[in-house]
Length: 160
Image (cartoon, rainbow, N blue to C red; front, side, top):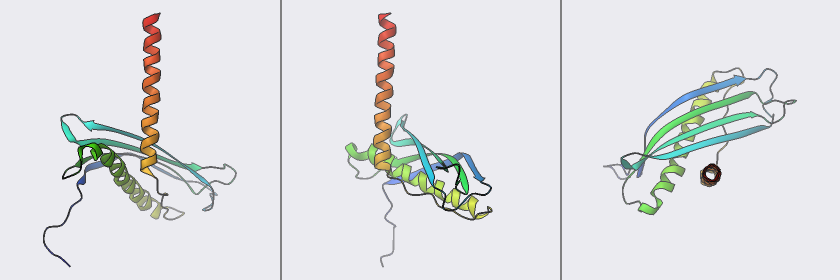
């Protein structure tokens, strides 16, 4: 075992906070009830800080079947700022910051949910892992579609 200066990751979570933590114990819920997990993400570079990104993660877990509800309904909103440094190539910085930064926020959400449900009537639960590479691709596609719709509206207003 080597001692001395630790080898830190080039990506650091500078801060994070929660604006919503809503966990509802469902009466007569079942621990085997099927669930849906929806997520919404947001990301943008910090103005004037080319190595930092602001991230947003909203998670909603609900019963998939109202006739056999899951034991909890959950909604959590988390925000954070990450910074990337070191020898990470410029072309990869944003993707690494967003994918790994959202993964760090997701871990914080998971920990919050476990802590709250550990003191709840049905006991602790953990949320399933997500593929943030796919989440990022879906978010980027959605942004492109929104930009295209906005351009079409502006074009029709200008023509009219």
